[in-house]
Image (cartoon, rainbow, N blue to C red; front, top):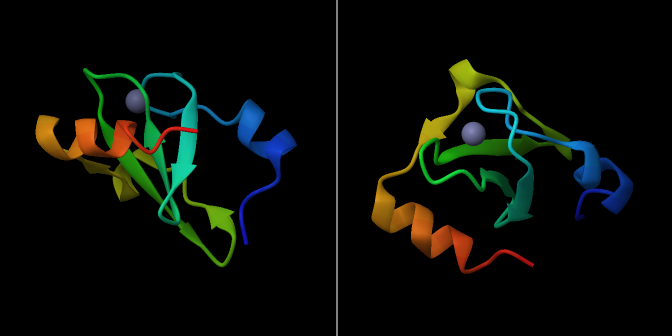
Length: 68
Ligand SMILES: [Zn+2]
């Protein structure tokens, strides 16, 4: 189930405070210098820097194409 739009609107990357968007059951930071991906577990976004993964540029650009 997708996250509630009202929730998504206020979510930002905890590392750089840039808005994130949802795709493939994960949240992606839209900052090209940060490029973090956060998982969503049981419909709860895990917005923790320590739990995030920094994508390489190629993977990040790929993810950005899924931005709504
Ligand atoms: Zn970020």
